[in-house]
Amino acid sequence: MTVITRFPPSPTGYLHIGSARTALFSWLYARKHGGRFVLRIEDTDRERSSEESVQEILDGMSWLGLDYDEGPYFQTQRMNRYQEVIDQLLDAGKAYHCYCTREELDEMREQQRARGDKPRYDGRCRHRSQPPQDIPPVVRFKNPLDGNVVIDDLVKGRITISNNELDDLIIARSDGTPTYNFTVVVDDMDMQITHVIRGDDHVNNTPRQINILKALGVEPPRYAHVPMILGEDGKRLSKRHGAVSVMQYRDDGYLPQALVNYLMRLGWSHGDQEIFTRQEMIDLFDISSVQRGSAVFNPEKLLWLNYEYIKAGKVDELRDHARWHFENAGINIDEQANWEEVFRVNQQRSKTLLELVDRSLFFFREIDGYDAKSVNKHFKGQAGEILVELRGQLEHVRSDWGK
Ligand code: GLU
Image 1: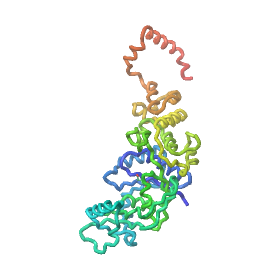
Image 2: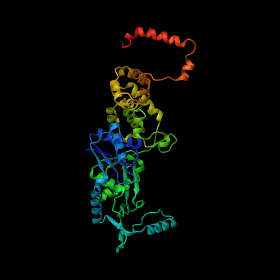
Image 3: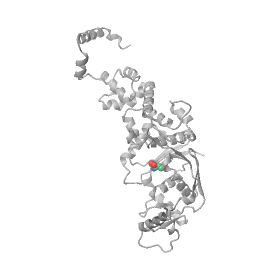
Image 4: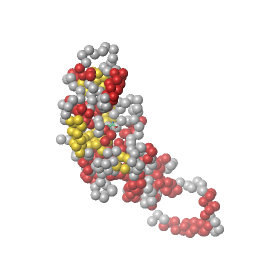
């Protein structure tokens, strides 16, 4: 069996580092097993999806070096296919039209609450014999009424959900558009996904998706639900905790390999090894040894790793990553004769590429001003004379400087 994993982001904002981590895990799993990695853009929410966000995802993937073997597929280009599968389920009696009005549903839920039951759709349209003419129906999936759904999750272990916890899910809205859980199922089936690695915020969707796959006669993939990343205050990682967008880290002067290394180690370990080459990551990473508990994001550790990568980096690779940061500072690094020496000195003391650029600028451009306050503070007494003298002395040794 060829392993096929996927990364299916919704393009509704920036590429979050939590999503990048599940993308990385899926990529590593495919690479480790000589399999394939699929990129699928889940853009059916047309109001919230945007072109810029798609571009940000593509840029982020390429910056992180997560290459895909198939895609990007776009769900909005697969609408006919979803319709075809909805019709197939309707024809087979595995889905049905539901004409319940909002008022009817509200009343049903009210009664359930009053009885102390969990509000859920009671399946009343399964047997409706005379459909009302004037109501455009939704399509619901006929969830099995008894039995359990068992998920042998590669991270969380066995999860069992009773079918009577699940109601008949809407798979197409009254305007005909398919819903999220349904499009995922059709895509995972058509793309022959063997391993679904995703955040555990999706764990409640999984039994529903498994039931639909089974109704379509398809063996469900294996699932691995990865715990969320939390901030140091124990809350889900968000902007409040600092940068959470992958591209923000690029802008802030991080190296992609440092971020990738950090994300892999977040909730996964191999003894006390901290730094891994790409190949080591592929060889050693194992989805089933990802921690079951949530991982806590530690920005200082990421900064430390970035520093380690900069210190140990090859200067020409550092230059490739720093090129546009220099451009932003008005310097064309490829035109600087002494850039290698400057990099070698500064890479030992720069935690980010921005620091490296900042420390290097005065080598590459004329000094165009000075800080009057510092001059007043430090240039006291004979300081001026001494410096002029020093300049004279240094002029003599100048020929040795290149050594
Ligand atoms: N599009 C979903 C999201 O961005 C991913 C769904 C999945 O992994 O199945 O959360």
